[in-house]
Image 1: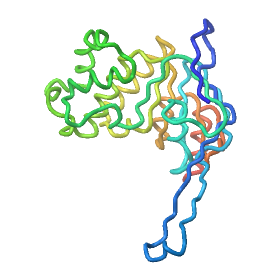
Image 2: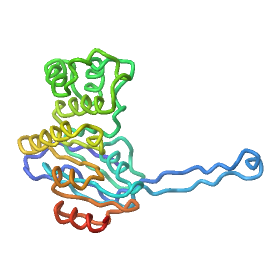
Image 3: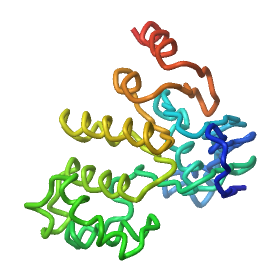
Length: 250
């Protein structure tokens, strides 16, 4: 169950609340063709998330870390509303904008200019709002020279810059990022981190960010949830937990 709730006047209200959230996927195992007549492939149930409960307050910068397959991206998709939990409840307050898949919300045959309107309207911007912010979006993405060329000609880094520029200009209350910053060059990564920190400080924007980079997490996040096999293995202050993780992974 996913709930959307209106803002309250509390400066430190809880804006993301998960209660006993689980997500199950079914993996189909098929046998070789000659055997299929005699044996039907078995279905395996896989729990990507298993009774996750967490609360994130307005203005917090939260990092999610864990090995591949630990449930990080599934957790982001559940919070974003891209997928529904198999059980449990998800409550979010405010406008949630996610940048999980660089291809999502874009059309490869449309130009960068056209994709700004397409993606912007998908994430809730009006056409008039996009027109007002259009040049700022293009300038922030530093794509003036390429904005009239088809998206399929863009590198992953260029798609990141365009998607991130649209995201931050959509005036979100909650930003969801999935390791996409690692696609950009060091200059843009630094620019993105500075922008997020400014948004958090001025507008109390909440950030949920998945990354394998302890250095980026230290710069960007104040709190970390460490996932293992769909469970919250540990959580806590970024500096303390990343120091522990550094020893754990060395």
